[in-house]
Length: 591
Ligand code: ADP
Ligand code: ASP
Ligand code: MG
Image 1 (spheres, rainbow, N blue to C red):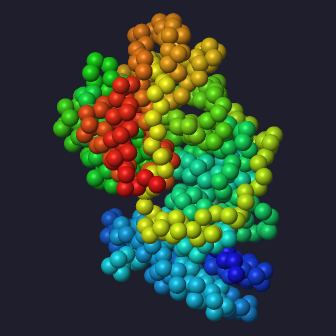
Image 2: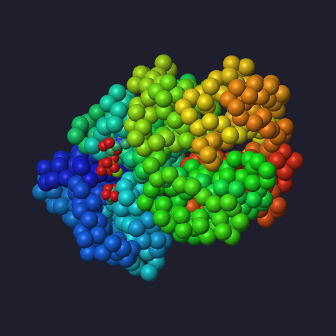
Image 3: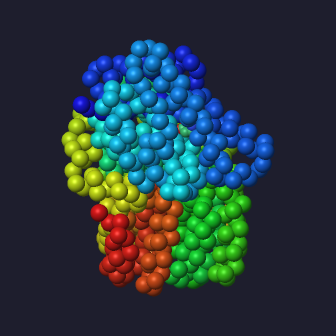
């Protein structure tokens, strides 16, 4: 018999009537002939209230006790949900994370799932029960209760779907699907019929709070089809699966993270291992780094900029202070009043000009871009927090995301996934469910790098530069921009080697017009990209990559990070050596 996993979020079980409504959905799925596992979150704002309570006692509650406290929210709702099903005449049993055999590591408040022994759930299902599973929680190897991080019930649901080889995982929530952006912020946003795992992963980590990003890592790794839909209606919602909604759309969605902080370490000696020294000190404090922009050095020194969530700024600055002293850097600056706006789409791989369109739209509204990073399927810019919402609305409109795409792919297939057919491969991957997986490491030796430095930090400059480059028919690949010092920015990007001459000619004229020094370049660079799952939620990946390259004496010129890949640009002659070193470094997790 096929298994369906359903998950109800906090608002969907906020009161007794809503719990009864969710119970009816579970009973209906069972009557339709499925075995049903229902994952529930804590009721309404319970988790927030519990956190608030703890903070009234102490500013720094011990993480173990926090987990003990927070897990109670879900324990209340599973019991009530099981009672609701009994009252409606069906059979149900509630289970905590420990009772379901969800074993995690011991990182309290953000634990990772190691394994799930689904035996007890299967037995209960076979006995005719609807299994009501507590979301968001597990148990460590030392039998302590753990939680998976805010929003983690989505991850419980998708992980159970993978472990049980479920036919599908239905996420019932207070919106009727995944929208092109948060519909509460941009009312014109459109519901997507379908979105690919990679796009959803990027959007979730770029701020689209509708899904916990780690749940999508699971879904991708185990090919679990996820259906995001409304708790309050029976309309179909959004399928998250392999294929995007439309093969022709360059952008499928936009997202915002409002509370970021930018740090720039100035005058870092440009030698192998310098970036590593900074990032390993930050990783040691368990702070995840978001955007990283390293620009090529002028006069043997580079500026390295990155962002962290604002709450992590104090810890980050301590690490930066230590690192810059040890490195002999010139100092650092920071800005805790910034926000990140991203656009995501698999289609941008094939369509040039997406970055230019985004920069032009922002420039026309007079919005200044403080930092830029791009990956094959995502462009992120940093803006002033006061302009964040306007920026999000502006890019949403610029890509006409409110409009239906002209061509739409067939709706994602539900069957024939490795999770469903239980291949040996899928079983092997279940051993350490949330481990980092590297799918591929590639080398691109076709690019050249150009850099314009001391660009005035004001609206419209990036748009102007990329419009002129595009008008000359030059396709830009990787872009990084960061503010350096004295309100001046450095901008680097890569172009095909054959277009270097033309690019430099154009840029020289532009630089003269803007009052910048002549552009610099490297005629042949090597771009190395590590593709995988868990690239950013495993905070050590970037450090490992830098350590590996530093160990073989390779200097990193440009860096770009995203949820599903990390790219670095190194000097052309070093490409092969870098590729071999990275393949050896990641051999244990390369599939
Ligand atoms: P639940 O409690 O069911 O887990 P969440 O509050 O975690 O619900 O997620 C649903 C909310 O996510 C929506 O109410 C919406 O405001 C927000 N959201 C953010 N980005 C998006 C998006 N791209 N599409 C849909 N909803 C989004
Ligand atoms: N109750 C938890 C939270 O509020 C988990 C979840 O809702 O997914 O973060
Ligand atoms: Mg949620």
